[in-house]
Length: 392
Image 1 (cartoon, rainbow, N blue to C red):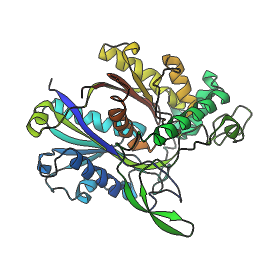
Image 2 (image 1 turned 45 degrees about the horizontal axis):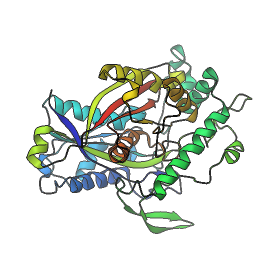
Image 3 (image 1 turned 90 degrees about the vertical axis):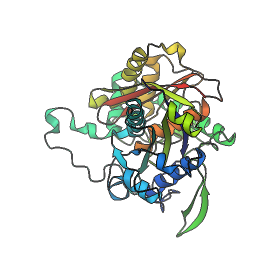
Image 4 (image 1 turned 135 degrees about the horizontal axis):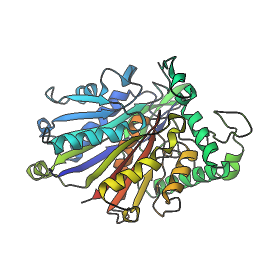
């Protein structure tokens, strides 16, 4: 098997979707084009663009400015040579990680030598559920309410006894970690500053977007306790806007290269994808995906959890993230989502898997980590997990 490495990674800041989004006036394909051009610059490939074999972008709700094969459209909008192809893949919440896995597989097989892989999502322009048309026969196979991720979060909390207090506690911790990392400047290296016209009252103002918009350092248990559940309203309801991930706008990408291409172009290997798995679970309990995927990926890699230095388990909802981390025995791990996760940084669906990989690429050397696990639940009953090795 060929040596394959991630040699560079970059992301935009994560904007909070809605009328006040810092990226409300920036198109999804333009965001993706920006990070593509930036990663080429950072890798020193400005004069060797023709060496890029493919661009693979993850995304979901592929319509409007997320549509028309945004992977290819972003190549064009980046001004790259027409000879560079591009494609788009959709595995919902793990699309950004799947794009990297596909790139690694292609390079491993010798089909490509140098691939840009990433993810993009613009939930301001294409809100969750836009254009959705669930099959009317869905109820023959599963509870049709599973199309609502919030419903599945409530189901996980009820089935596994994840209390409101536990959920709110994770949310408070997430915002505190993300705020601390931001104040310490730990995200500066991975974020590409983007100049944008940001909504401001009845008009806009020009702003350099270089930090994540949704972090709320003022979040406390008392503040969260005052929020009402948003997905169900009976006495058992516990999932609120405060202990759920946000909806967001962002783009991120990495460069995947063969060992031979690294030597040829003078690229520095930073991470290696040791193994990657996806699993299916009951769609009604979508959020348990990582609890199934992580043991499987560790077994495939011939590793134990004691060898993992950093755990990045995306917080789609605190209910599922608490459950998964408790089952995995890592809820109190020193480096569990050490710089925040979906609840604080945000969850821009198709971008999240790449955003996490980019953050890992920058944080692993900071913590002296050799191995890290990245995992997330995936809409409609899936889970994905990857083991990363730092080789830089």
